[in-house]
Image (tube, rainbow, N blue to C red; front, side, top):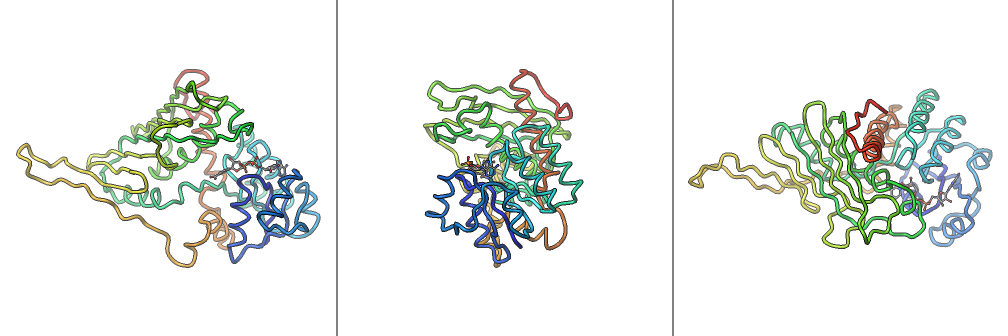
Length: 341
Ligand SMILES: NC(=O)c1ccc[n+]([C@@H]2O[C@H](COP(=O)([O-])OP(=O)(O)OC[C@H]3O[C@@H](n4cnc5c(N)ncnc54)[C@H](O)[C@@H]3O)[C@@H](O)[C@H]2O)c1
């Protein structure tokens, strides 16, 4: 399958390498307007200078491709996706789908109208911890999940001048999207409302608020609390965060890179009875695909099988709705229903 890689910035290298490592993918063109980033890609990543173009339209004139890998900033995603769809190409696009919810809806509709495969790179949910947790919750390991608490403390995005540091609510929109999408995947459910409070800490380096508490309510009564800080200089969590899912048969917790099931319900006052504290073996990927980028592997499989991939843009609309509702709630200081968007 022939790919055009669009955007050779910080994240572009991951996709250049992922495409080169996939046996069924060949990068036939790269698109990047910045001379400095083009030069870095040639010198440091080993990109052939003959592949480089200044814009996607120029690259499309050069010859046939099957799909675009879009690694541009969120505000550019609509232009890239629409150009790709108009030219009959599928799209594997970096998260977040856009920085504007009206644009998110337009992009999803355009992909559906053009009948293209369109996947968003929600890579976090492909890790062993969420994969295993999703399966175990479905199998009923903790009974009915009724509360989820996520603690997330990281020193996030500290490159001066980048859009991560200068734009408002970037920690919610750019990082929150990973966790909110993982919530939907792990729980197999979509929330109906959110209430958010955001703030900044005196030593923080982000112009927009980079600390928050967001409380999501689900239709079945489940409550999920996302408590996060993007300028943590003290004890930090992993980028997955520390998760605690509570049910009537105990809790499933993520403790650094490990998962545990804990259940002491049946302990009697005399100390007898059943008490469980088990580390859960993780479902690590097996077979030849295990070494490939799992998002690209899913996208290629979906194209081969002529189906929409997991994390299709249409599905991602629901994760994006969580983000934009959380921001609206912070701005308007009230609980926001996702259906309002
Ligand atoms: N999934 C993840 O874990 C993860 C991690 C980092 C970044 N990202 C996402 O990847 C995307 C890119 O992030 P980044 O950190 O690489 O940003 P970046 O600013 O470093 O790079 C973006 C590149 O796109 C180029 N560009 C801008 N307009 C263009 C256009 N019209 N055509 C072609 N190229 C254009 C820029 O010159 C730049 O080189 C963002 O959506 C970001 O959220 C995802």
